[in-house]
Image (cartoon, rainbow, N blue to C red; front, side, top):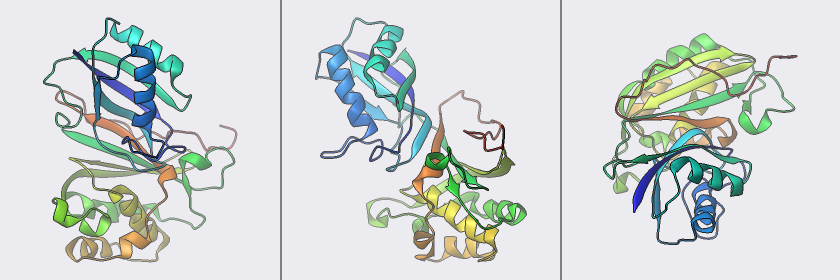
Length: 262
């Protein structure tokens, strides 16, 4: 049985996240249906680099697939893409060592969030439109408080009794491009809803509703405020999963152009 690395992109709008679930349409569940159809086999396994929440998109999710097949990686990629729905696309398939594991071998991940600065007819599934003016300088200053190793218990629905809520956030980049406020969070791993709640709090700072110093308090003291401020999933993208040797420095780029006439 061979192991393959799959890099894929998807629009998460119609799915209940990445992870296969009973009685729910998920990206991995659809992928499994197509693998069974294309390969004619049911004795395969796949693992993703991590879960994405319902409605969250991926620019480059990584999974590995253990499958008995004579097809070349490129032939397998083409065959799977022919049967996958239009909102899931496999970018590449590579044969890898059995030592490679999509989740355990990952050294870091980055998520990108897009906030629209104007109402948009075309970009609604991929942004969070905020009507109020946002002070980007305040957002950028507050974002720095998230960097480092912190307890993100207040920023997640994960049960702290089931695992540590300590997360190492390497950096939070904030920029503007083509009618969008872009927020990228890079870290070791992420908790359930963590990035969306970080963005929700930063949006309140940008609106002037709370002070940037509140971020440090929310990291020190348990609070339900981040849950109340959770940003919608539409603007969130799993941007990259990083493995040994991958370049971490990347320009902060939008997924779509909201410049009028652009």
